[in-house]
Length: 420
Image 1 (cartoon, rainbow, N blue to C red):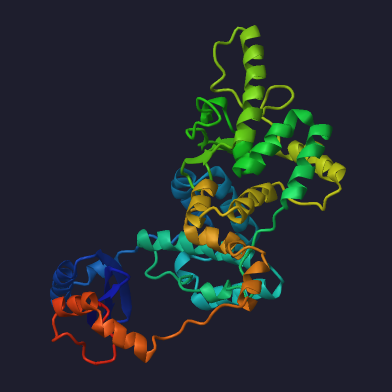
Image 2: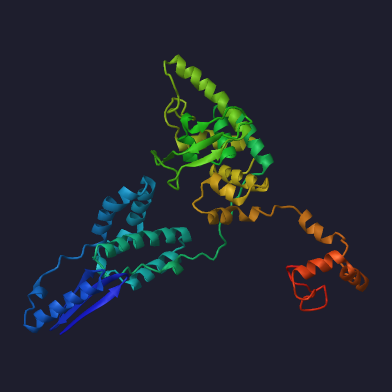
């Protein structure tokens, strides 16, 4: 007979081993409660009462069943639709085929190691491995919270997703390339020139540009008014309106050029709205489709973005690189990394440093040329100068005011206390 209690990950578990029959149960987070239950069970077993061991616990659900329950009860409530869609894709393509039929308490750490080693050998990227591991880990974490398993076998398996490649560094357009692209956009698709200018001058993501409303823009009293900005509070992902990526609104300063372009476009929209009997346009999209509906992101790329690149004679780049161009040009103009972080809406300053840190020093060879410039070496005071200093009544007075008999620990005034 044996009744033991053990603490695992902040919870106390009771383990009973009686005549070959075993049972384990989570009894809460209090050791006092666990000890009390242990004594009660020992008393029952001493009297020959082992009826509680006859109770059949509900079977542990399979990974497939629990994952679906987790999606409905947690992910769909707490996460964005795009995140839930990512979870579903990972479960459908990789995790369910491998672990779907197993009960949660039958998934071992060794199985997970072999599974991720197989994925790595198949050539999957580190990001894919990381997303897959995060998905199964968060599901099994919830299973621990629900007392369905004692320990998460997917915990602390980060070594399978560590990348030997350097961290991502943004590739951006030069100022000359961005100007050529904007000129091409004015020729190829003048109706969306301001959209591309907004991406370049405000660093908005594609979904944020598409979801931008006139009520989100504060134009200020004039171009000299510093209170001019875009309040980024909407996003459009997977055909649904949602919040920005970090789930936080951010304020992006409005440049003079962008302000002028948006004001001109706003005046056109106001005239059209008034002609249709509308009193305001605050809730209207800034960049709708030609038919007035939500602009399709894929159509934006195929019909306008790529043709503008081709017309400009530039290498092919992504729409998101317009955002990187914004951040890169800010840093090259001397903006602080903190300001760039706030403008870009990064979750932490570390993300900003990792992405744009290589641009901070600037590609200026003049810095190393300064090392070659001739300078007059700094010289120590000569003995005659030292004597003059000692004889100077003002210096002597200062020394005496600090005490120490007019001298520091050494008579050499070149080695003086910091206070002098």
